[in-house]
Image (cartoon, rainbow, N blue to C red; front, side, top):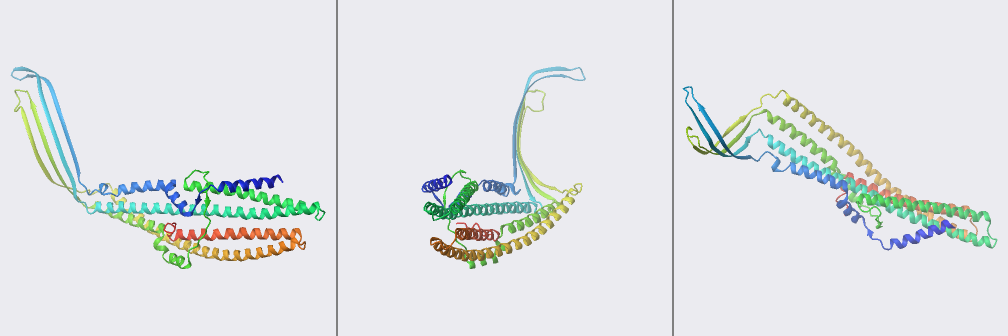
Length: 439
């Protein structure tokens, strides 16, 4: 009896607590996750670095401009002695020197080395954006999995609670009949055992639901003990849309796009290394200004000022660099070949996962239909047994068996419903559609 009152208290408390909660739809959960999830924030920051590296400021196309300036001042004592024994001494000879310089360096021709490096950095940035998208896809799939697990467990809790109410009602009837001598002590004890069994099952369902809610809050990166009333509506995509997603999956799959970018990057890296075999032609220019003054009466001049512009072309040719360039070229070829092999392997894995997920989704939809039919049969069987039990035709054991069958049918149908939805979402992720179909 204490257990029954405990369950009743939890049920009433949960109802009163939930009445003040906010409703959380799957769209709301997606928005919270995209805004708050830490994994997404980290990968987005890494993408910013690749974007910075791919800008024109890091391309080598812009000139190098440097400047320098300085001022020197000295105060010296000079003592002179010649081979003819002539000598003299000058004290506090002051001299000053001021200078400034502006120089320009620009590469006119480098055999397209800058172009290939620039394209490589752009492709690295593009690949980074795809990697951000892949993290978002994985995070959304994780969110959906946890969100619908919470929905499933909440529905499971209600199913078990409903079964518990049936057991409690049966126990109450057995107590009344026992008081009037219409039932045995054994039947009363069996009813109490069934209530305790269902109570424990209900308590476990509450515990599992609470744990799943914390998992959901962790994915959304909100307060772990935040609680919501989840929108448990489950809507499936039409067969026409699923077939369209299946036919275009190879073009939209994010992982395949990443491998395509890796092949392009390896190609540009090889071309960049090959460009170093030819000379580099550069433009140089500078403007210089210098002013010198001194007090030495024996100097050729006491003041000197000059300024002017100079410019020219230079050629640099790294003809042989200890064989490092040859090794780098060979390694770049191998990396390009490996990237092509990895792309081919990824495509095979993709085809397997796509077909597996497609077949799993169709199979789970079929299972859902079967479970719905089974639930309908179990429900009808239970209602008939309930009628017979009320008039004493069916035994307690037979009635309990019908009750358990109905409970299992409801739980199986509940599981099948969410399994079908999760398999659909896994298919959407592989076909590159999970983000566009998240709102």
